[in-house]
Length: 497
Image (tube, rainbow, N blue to C red):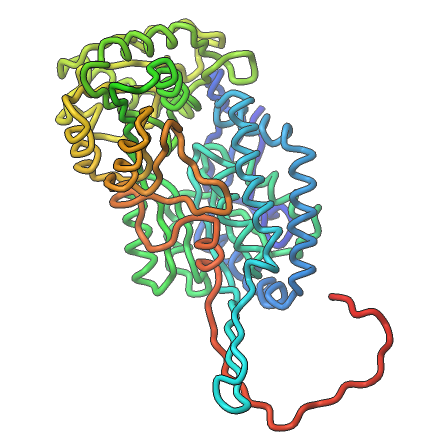
């Protein structure tokens, strides 16, 4: 029997009746596990109205109070992260260890937000003129919206909402309708942590809900993560409505392997970064650039490691789970068909994979292509699945030119034992996040996440100080006081409140 999954508005589950619903599946079985209410524009308005009312009070809560709530949320999440990981596995399909890793990386942003009293400190200059002082402050925006993708139902929302809430905003989260339960679970945890009703809301939905958030006059900013075409749409429509927008788009991440690299390390990294979460990561390595003469040996090592990967139900002891939906599985499989037809050498074919799971699951095993050309669709498009392509080049310069010619600029890695080559690459490559012998260079929470070119629309990256600045507005105050005031007598120890 399917479970009803509904919105979270005003600090409690939504009590209304939805006219439209979406199906939520267990990807390991292919069976429907839930029915999610899809929000109309009116439901979005209800959530924004509740958030706006809450924001008026929450912005005036002391930094001490805000920190206490965020820290309480951190403690609850840390104690119950296994529970959230199991929810993610049940609806997304990624293996439990990977889901737990996702929660842990999101938790790092919550911990960063616990330092909000320091992060919001302004500057002060005394006597810029006689008796005149100048100081700067940062204030919250009000209601902010977060639109998150299916591949990280907990981590990606946590790139944004802990910082936004700590800064004094209220948040309306629109998670993916494919795996929505994690968002509701997080909302319940915020309530348990003592967050006032309305400061964190969840509305489920599709384009109708997204469009209403983009046009609603009380929504001050939009944070989005998803495919590049949709990111561009969100950015253009949101900014045309006068909103701040940070829209993180797609990726085609390259891993360059130089001739002096440790090929065992590089092969391990290629498999880990290419097939973790069934390749459904914006930071997945989907193109390995092998610089002559390492191609043959590197491909053989990657293929050997792929032979030991077990595919199956993510709740079991396997390395890779299913894809999110049958439709997406079929789309990724069509790219395998196309690569084979275009003449790439199919080294490992994931279409014929023994799995530890039910036959109805959305299965596609890890796939490896060699001799891939840049004109092939398996190289050109973001596949978002367990398909790894090896492109061979003759030199470092050719590898760099290949990466820089790509329209995406999200993440990249170089594997080498030559410090000079690595330093040159990090300087010359036109990509926002670079790994040196690190295949998935996702920054820690106190740095900011985001790419270049068609991987980012807007000027601000996620979390870190860029996140604090995105969710606040700066104000500079110039003041002169002609007569000092005098307070009364109070011998008690001063405290914050």
